[in-house]
Amino acid sequence: MSFLGLGGSFVLNISLNAPAAADAASESNNKIVLIDHVPRWKAHKNPFHGMKFTGGTGGDQIAPDPGMQQQQRQYAPRQLARQPFRPGSTPPKIYAYESSQDVVGSATVSLPPGKKADHLGIKISFLGRVDLANAMEGSNRPHYDFISLSKELEPPGTMYTSRQYPFHFGNLEKMAETYHGRHVSVRYLIRVSIERKFLPPLTKDCEVVVQSLPSQSTLERYAKLDQPIKMEVGIEDCLHIEFEYEKRFHHLRDVILGKVHFLLVRIKIKHMELAVIRRETVGGGGSNGMDISAAGADAAANSSSSKSPGNVASSANALTETQVLVKYEIMDGAPIKDEVIPVRLYLGGIPADLTPTYDGSTTNGRFNVRYFLNLVLVDMEDRRYFKQQEIVLYRQHLG
Image (cartoon, rainbow, N blue to C red):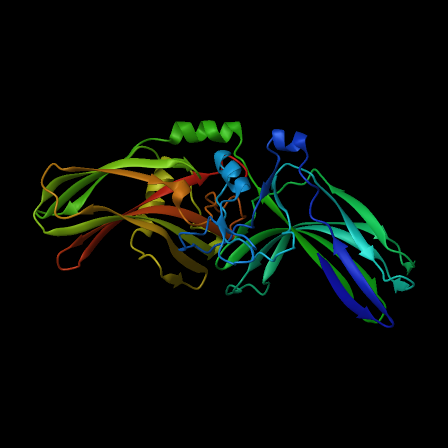
């Protein structure tokens, strides 16, 4: 990565290496993992998003990516939103760091041969930043830094040759993993800046992807709280159904299992759908954050079930974006009494970058991200009956 800046009679090239390559020891400990892209908010609808288009002469050759297949076997995400391939070019390598892993690399400041450059100091910084796409009411800051650590690389002086500066940032508490949402993002940046006299500083950022794995105590707490979800809903004297999901807590590559039992059917049902919904809420002081308990999860699910998917809701203190990640039709035709419809949904098959559930405590009340299962019944008159149930997602493997 490079940045070209003109200053007087010289051209200054600032090059910042990607984070240090994951060595064999780190990969064996699952601390640093090679990924193919930075996770994004967008859901992909192209069924061929997992294929790689090679740069052959015919322009129509398609070949599977062996690296992708190996990563899939290691519970890594599929090839989504691949960067455009240019023949003869090497795509940049992107690594996902475990939240406790040190960030090591090097920064290179280059000068054209025979040139010199005066500067007022060179420094490198590690930033943990929350960016708000839309400034919330009562807040005049589009972003805030929860981590800001700087080191001086070079005192004020004159540079005559190109130089390389190694850096090492360790023992940093990263409160949340990297997230790029609709209205908010969490980023970790390595920033190199060169101060100049009478001119604005030259800066270059390199994003570090950070992912968090739950501790053993957190997994044990999930196991204690993880109970089957059973609910009975319906319309008096018309419809009475009971649906059940085997558990509430799921890792990002898990399979959701359940069933829908029709106890009473007196309306003509056309089909039934099951959707996975992601809801991002910014602001509100974290009041919409999830309480990781059985009672808290039930209250959160009931309070949010009245919002329709795909809409943006806003208030004086909060902005909510709801996104339908995937929708499947799990029943076609009218059911009969006592019929049981099985439910099996693979989270790994969702064409989007799933993230763990973000609660208010993780993000200091700035935002939260929650996931819901939305069960919809559609009758012959196209009336829709739906019920939402919140689920908690967590990361089991890096990638």
